Image (cartoon, rainbow, N blue to C red):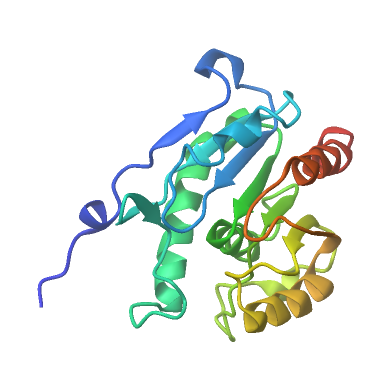
Length: 219
């Protein structure tokens, strides 16, 4: 079987920014990671409601999926594997490495599958991120894979996890695994919302702004 090269599988990242290039340097970086079937525009409206002190970058996932994009195949699909998750995380980490020198810190915000991505990046680079925000998502079960350095996450990295208990998309097994993981490995701020389903509401974004201000900007 002929295999595709990395360049064919993953094109150069498409990134939308909250600030023009000349206004980003020196600002804390906040990387937005969208959900399954969405694109880089999906979360950028969130940036307008967050503290303007951040340079916000919304990254497009590399795999075309319907009208949008995905980071990896759905976990219930036959095409899913942990290797696919690791390939996607390497894609984002390589891009972050090209720009991180211009920012005093890097934080991550992921929605749905984007939360799986954000927490994967943290688990692979435990010392690299100031804070993580997960919205209506989950943490990947990585088993004993040595590239997931969970043992180095001792509960000091602040993480916000917002969700609706009636979320119809994220299955209970994923919630249970995520609950066990966050309680053990991060400094958790967990907030439940009603009537939000699998989405984001204004109250949640206000809470995220307060969290980022307290845990990143005021440190």
